[in-house]
Image (spheres, helix red, strand yellow):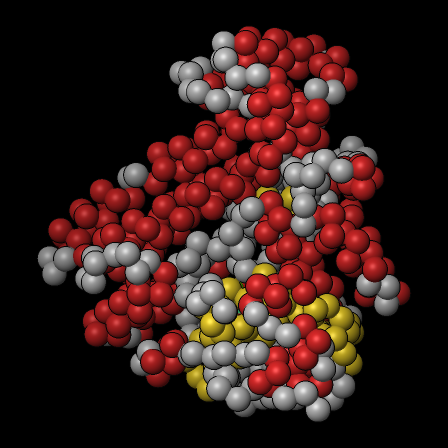
Length: 484
Ligand code: AMP
Ligand code: MG
C-alpha cells in the first residue's frame, strides 16, 4: 500500500483555528469499492503531489472519503446564504475538507471532497453526488482555467460503485476540488447572523490574512473593496466569454474571487442576453444579462454582514458601505469595456467604443449569431459574416475605428486571438462527452474535450471540429440542474 507521505501532502489546517461554530468534524462515510476515473495530472503537479502515488490505494481512499490522510482536517464548513433572494442556513451538506495543502511554492489550497456523504448540514439531502455532474464540473472548471478565468479546479473524480437516487438511480461519484479557500459571502452572513462581534472579527481577520495579506490589520473597508474588485473582474470575464453561472447565490460567491460551484452553469451558443439554462431559474434572476447586477446585489448582502466592522456607529457604517457599493458598476464596466476592446483588437480608447461594442451585440442578437464564433470569425477575418446587411454596416464602423489606430494588422490579430477563445465547452459537446462516460463507460471523449478546452486560444486544427455550433435554436432549450 502507498503511504500518504509518498503522495506529498503537506497539510496546514488554518480554518480549524476559527471558533467551533464555523465547522463540524466529520467521520468518514466510506464507500465500498471506489474507482479512479479522473486524475488531473496538471493540478497534481501544481500542487507538488506525486501522480503515481495519488493513483495508488491511499490516494484513491482519500478521494473516496474512506480515510483522511495523516495531518488532514476532516471537517464540514458552516455557512449561510441568500438562495434566489431568500436567506437560509446552509453549510457543506455533501462536502468534506480533507485539509489545506501547502504547495512547494508556498501557496495554500483547500482540498475538498464533494459528494462524500452526509454531514450535520445535510438537511434532507443524501450527501452524495452523481457521476455526470461531477464530470461536468471537471470539464467546465478546466475550460474556465484554460480561458484564464479564476476558478476552483478538480483534482480527481472517483466512482463509488453505489447508486444514488435522483430522478432515477444513477452512478455515485465523488469529486476532489481544490480552491484557494471555500470562504464565501455566506460564511460572513453566517457569522453575522449566528455568531457575535468577536466571531465576526475573527473570521474577517482570518480571511484578510489568507486572501489579502497586503491590507493593514483592521482595514475592513479595504477588505470589502478588495473582494468587490475581484468580483467585478470575475463577472466581467464571465460576460466576455458568454459564461452563465446559473446559481449566483451568496453562498456560491467566494472571498478569493474564484468561480465556484459548477451546477447549472453553461456557455451561451446563440447570443441572447436573456439566456438562462438553469431548470429552476424560472424568473431569469441569474440570466446572462443580470449577472453584473446580481454581483452588485450579492456584494450589498456581503457588506451588510460586515457593517458592524465598518464603524461602531451603524448609520455611519451604512454610509461607508454605500460609498463603496456605488463604485461597483463602474468597476465592472471598466473591466468589461477593457476586455471588449481587446476582443475587437482596439488598443487605445475612444469615446465611441462602448457604442461600437453595443452595436455589435445588437446585430448579434437580431441575427441570433453564435457568441463565440462571431468573435472567432472576426479574429480570423472570415468575412462570410459580413454578408448580412446589418453586420456589414457595423463592420465598416469597426474597420474605420481600427484605421484610426497605428498598430499593425498583425498586432490587432494577435490581441484578438488571445482575447477570443476559439473553443468553449459547448453544451452539445459536454452532453455527448457525459453520455459516453456515464452510459457507455467511455471516458476518452471527456478527456479529448478537456484537452482541447485547456488551450482555447490556440486556433489549432485539432479545434476546428469543436468550434461547430449546434443547429439554430438547439441550445436555447438546453436545461441544466442544481445539486445533482
Ligand atoms: P449548491 O446548489 O451545490 O450550491 O448547494 C446548496 C446547498 O445544498 C449546500 O449547502 C449543499 O451542501 C447542499 N446540498 C446540495 N446537494 C446536496 C445533497 N445531495 N445532500 C446534502 N446536501 C446537499
Ligand atoms: Mg454551493
